[in-house]
Amino acid sequence: MREKLQKIREEAMRRIEESKDLNKLNEARVAILGKKGELTAVLKGMKDVSPEDRPLVGQLVNETRAGIERMLEETKAKLEAAELEVRLKREVIDVTLPAKRNLSGHRHPNTIALEEVERIFTGMGYEVVEGPEVEYDYYNFEALNIPRNHPARDEQDTFYINDKILLRTQTSPVQVREMEKGKLPIRIIAPGRVFRSDEVDATHSPSFHQIEGLVIDKNITFADLKGTLAEFARELFGTETKVKFRPHHFPFTEPSAEVDVTCFKCGGKGCRFCKGEGWIEILGCGMVHPRVLKMSGIDPEEYSGFAFGVGLERIALLKYEIDDMRLLYENDMRFLRQF
Ligand code: DAH
Image 1 (spheres, helix red, strand yellow):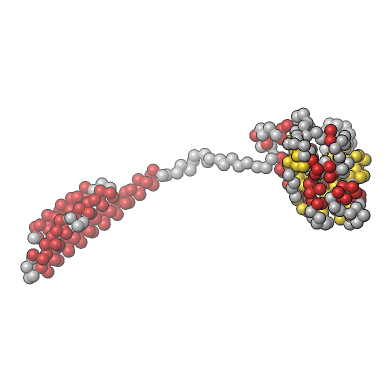
Image 2 (image 1 turned 120 degrees about the vertical axis):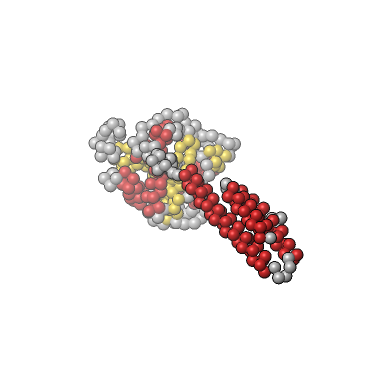
């Protein structure tokens, strides 16, 4: 029996030694100690050993088993260490290689300009609201005091979906939608895309953006309009900026004005940027026409208000000194990266 166990042990040691990786070692373990292994067979044969020999044989079998298990453990540890070593070598990081740069995008100049305008007006307590780009003729024209045959419609010729529905030519219809809600006072700006059948050139596009403003409350006067827009201009173009209100006509405001600001390049002396004028036009505005208030369910005897409309691209072109509006739409990375 002693010899048999000795043979089993030697055979086991040899198999273990020959195991070149953890998989092979595991196979060896199963073959030696598993249910069908020789050592297990010996254990099963214990019942045939005479009772007086049993303790001794039992001890021998246990020693053999323990020896084999120790060898398995040691070999396993050695193989694991070797595999780790190989993996570490393979996965080594070359810190001298140039890093992969993450290209991160940024906001479009239009968006930067819009957020600047929103910052200024929300700072004065305005709320930012939006209206639909596909609009009813009623909101885009009729309710703004531009009836069917009004010549102002010509200037703003647009894309009609059908007789009653069109792509909005201005953000002014949002004024009407806001007034119709019946919640007063109102203090909003409404940015958004507008559409006109304009030819593309350096200052025109069939699709551009406006920011509408509307304030309705009791006792709102032209002085409020002037103060608000003067403050807006100073925040946007610098504290030295002056504003000039030129009389103008819009069907939905009375009186109406266009606002010029002093050229922020030359301070008003006249330069190439302002084409020698010293002034740059930035927006249209006026006191909301009583008829417009009435059509939207507001009593013009009790309430009054002012409105304004700014071209967003115009602001972006001025602020970032871009000389062609088309650049804003071409998505040329060489241009966009500059902002
Ligand atoms: N909607 C006008 C346009 O597109 C701009 C405008 C002028 C808006 C005067 C206003 C305003 O709210 O009061 O030409």
